[in-house]
Image 1 (cartoon, helix red, strand yellow):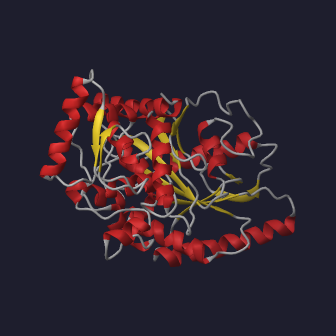
Image 2 (cartoon, one colour):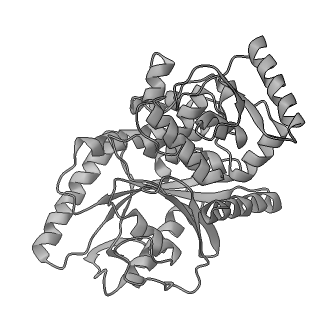
Length: 414
């Protein structure tokens, strides 16, 4: 089995153990930001791990010896990985989830965030969101405004006090550049407050010095020489903002929506990104299907898929429950038994090949057959959801798109 899947199961097992032993959910912090905002560097500073970011200067070393960490990787497309690391800060455990960078042109990041939340929401609570912006970003673009609106839709007004707005890349030593960065900080704060319709946001400048009371001194730390000091201030920020009782806990809006079985495309965040549509075909073409709440199901892990294939052989199928299908299926099972327990299946729809009605043995070229084999939902909506979750692009239900799903299923579960 893929080591990434094993690590993910270990992560979920640890959260489950924590919940079972303490009757309390684990604390989860989620990192959000555009590509290159410095999320991975902050992950390193909070956990003591190295190797997350290209800027890592302490590869293979822990920054602080009293931070217990375990890197756990959620399997996603090669170009995008959501990673979870566990850190202990001032005696308190946190699970920190790094997410793919925000891309207004590619909505898959949203489904990756949802998948991460779905996988842990029954045993963990989202204690806080950390939204990162590079202070060296020359201007606040329309995509940044949309991301702020996305955060508001994702969280809801009651949860905004638990969002920390973080600026990164305070690495300059030039006085004039520092003045420019300070001016940019004022502008960013204005944009954030305007976009959220809120004031007195929780701010943190990652790379500036803080005093013993947690107040910003405006002094820029040399990141390359004093990385340990930068990391220490980051941990102190987590302790200030999330280690103490900051306010009565209200789960973010997205969690309430998922618990109410609202389809992902119809959540506030999904609608903001234009994922809702008047028809199922439109919705699936955007990467996420619309379906009744009762039919929503989460993509299982390989172990779950194996169990599902044994206990639920009639998972939702695209093929109609017609007498013709039942007849062919019975014949296939009978012949398979007569030939020595050979696996024979019926496929009434082969979108990858575009072929008409076909019966007979397992078709290795059919994504439907492969998904059925591992207990995954092979229906049109199930395939569209799988493609959206795992970042498979292309024209939905085309031969190339179906073949990409087949290869991905084989790689993950085969």
